[in-house]
Length: 312
Image (cartoon, rainbow, N blue to C red; front, side, top):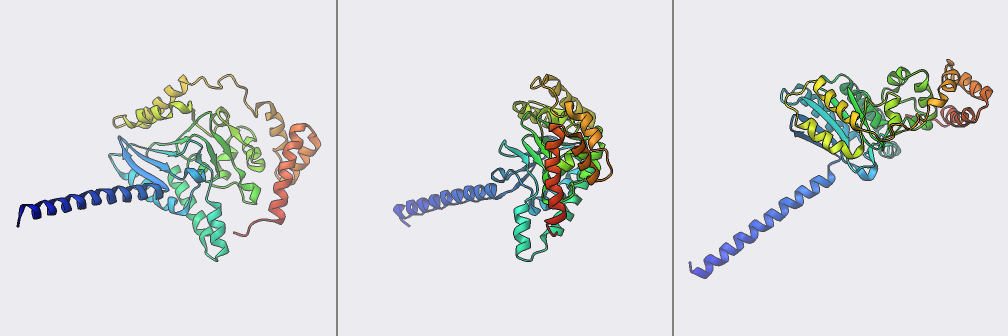
């Protein structure tokens, strides 16, 4: 074999290597773009990233089926000391379940609805019973399915961008993802009010209402996460200490009045009835602008629930 032949072979081999590297990068890129949820072991923690920013990180059945087994694995792993869950994109933690996918499946005769809710609630229960500290960074929109992924965990960190609501009663569904458990445990009748009206809590009010356990400025979240990941064999108390230190530093909206505070007397009186019909009558009799505004929402939802309820 001549020298020219050798050079041709080397050149061809080099070209093949470069092509292989390019293909590997392309495969990684495709995988990253397609991954709706990222599951990583970083530092002392397992990190879950909801990765559908274009869809406000709406929770799909496939995401549930990836998160649940990994959560159970990390719970049993002696090298994993805490679990962090967050949303990608900066706009939402998780805006809810992927209702569009469920609706499309129903149109084609698939039984995804029952399967989705059964597996979603199983995941919610696993979060509630998780033996490792579970930290949900609820930065941005947190509704429906996103509430289920966060509110049952031990630690929930809100920011000034947090937006919490239970809007599912607007489509004729009961307060979803364990709402019947955690909502009645809020102050006074606040939980009943949130459930029946879909009222939106924003920013620091998410913490003040008891939905979040801590409040941190959104610009500090990355630093907070890195500090949590750097902990050595942390206990739940160690995690709480870090969260409390960041909360103590936060001054954003600290002096802002609580949005629902001025209406708590009306909320407690009007929403203390045992039936929706009586609550509506209480709001009618109250007659204040606040009561009439809530009456409008309650009547709309009642009409949906009695006449146009989706068949699940």
